[in-house]
Structures are given as structure tokens and as C-alpha cells.
Image (cartoon, rainbow, N blue to C red):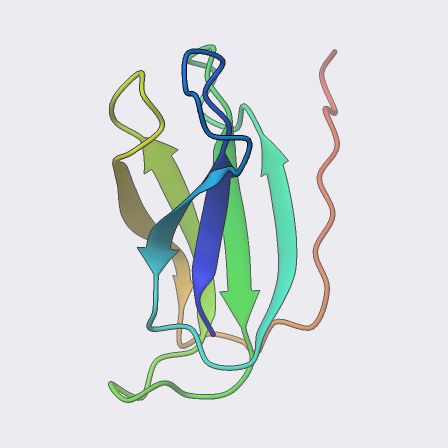
Length: 95
């Protein structure tokens, strides 16, 4: 599975959004959710997979935006090989 982001530029002449590939290592990806999980004012993406990939990994990854153009993300394992992901949800528990 490819995790992609479609980016629309107001300044672009094209009416078609540009596809940015974030990760091609997820296998049978499930449970995509977004939010400001790091509290830094930007949105992060969290995705999980339930079938081991080529490296044998399953679990949940957080993708952190590292530039303002939404073209570069850094992946962080939240749960590596601890569980197979089927569904995810996010909620702000402290307001």
C-alpha cells in the first residue's frame, strides 16, 4: 500500500492535485487518522498496517511534517510489531 498525500497549490496553473508519496512500506494499511498529536500547530498523519511488510514490520506510524510545503514528512513508529492495526480513532481528552 502506498500512503499518499494529494496537494493542491493555489498558485499552480494545473487543476490536478500533486500526489506526494509518504510511505510505500505499509502492507494492508488500515486506520488512517490525522490531528495535531505533537502540539506543534501542524497536522500529523497516523497510519497502521496489519500484515507484515517486506521487513516483517506491522503496527502504527506517525508522519510528521518537516517543511511548510507539505512535501517532506518524517516517519516515527508509535507501535512497531506490537499489534496488527484494524481501526484507529483520535480524540482530544484534555481540551
